[in-house]
Amino acid sequence: LGVLKAGAAYLPVGPELPVERVEFMLADAGADVVVTCRDVRAVVPQGVRRVVLDEPATVGELAGVEACVLSVVERGGALSGGLAAYVLFTSGSTGRPKGVVVSHAGIVNRLVWMQSRFGLVPGERVLQKTPFGFDVSVWEFFWPLLEGGVLVVARPGGHRDPAYVAGLIASQGVSTVHFVPSMLEAFLGESSAVSCRGLVRVVCSGEALAVSLRDRFFEVLGDGVELHNLYGPTEASVDVTAWWCRRGEPVVPIGVPVANTRVYVLDQWLSPVAPGVAGELYLAGVQLARGYVGRAGLTAERFVAGPFGGPGERLYRTGDLVRWDAEGRLEYLGRADEQVKIRGFRIEPGEIQSVLAAHPGVAQAAVIAREDIPGDKRLVAYVVPAEEAHNDELVQDVR
Image (cartoon, rainbow, N blue to C red; front, side, top):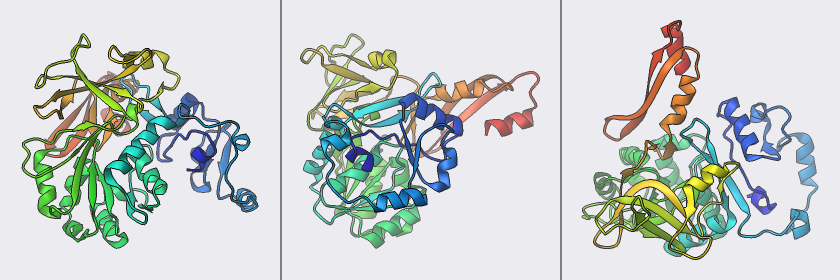
């Protein structure tokens, strides 16, 4: 929030990431300064300018600053909708992650739509439990603050513990919470989930929401709690379609477009397909990201010229296969490429394969997603050792 108030863009960097990944992200995004604290400052590469918030000198300096509204001069320039608000990195098929640059106009549209859809009232409580490197965290952070709501922040790693999440929802009177479907499954299997009496709505996104899980939701929480299925890539400001789930529907659609957003189901020649026919989903409108930081070629490949709108309009090619149903809703069918989603995170197996193949003890590598237990999707790597490799050491390194 402070970074955005100052007129800058923020790049979330988890301190648990490998040092090489941190160095790459900071350099690739062109980060000017790292805001951190003493416990994790060792992760920040040498030579990078940093502000350590809990150092005595910083604490003293901040204590002497009066609260005020920043002026344009203090920001270094006027804010506009086209300026970058944040950069989030997603997996890349070539082994190089890509930083998505999202504008103020895009994310503000998403937040305004959310308020018009759900009508959060002052004092209502929203749980923030999504790691800040995942784009759902953006609306969890800012939506309640914009509307006079209360932000309930889970402990680090708490999103992995269904019993803790259920207890926090119940004790803090949380009305709104987000789950990726795999974690919703775990939450509903927790006996204390039924004690979350104050829940008004649950928002799902990040993975396909199965009919069986939807039905299980209403069995556990009842019809008094709303279930909403949202869809969208990081490249389009979190979510671009939504559906309010009801009992008894034969499928769980990803729904219809949010405000100021258009969706197209197209064939390989960029022509619209008929309802019921599978095609690739393309997105247009104010929520499209500016592109990938420092990756002009990739930006041009994924953000293509749109044949349907005015001059200069772009379409984002999602790589997702969908179809229109008879009611004018979108149904998700799968991917057109090898990308997978595990617990809400987009993963390119090619990125992991390239890292494994770079190991001197690996001759060949392949990575796939397996779901040996329903609802428990995992990445599995297969490697062919180099002739001189010691298998025990290699297995340890791969892990």
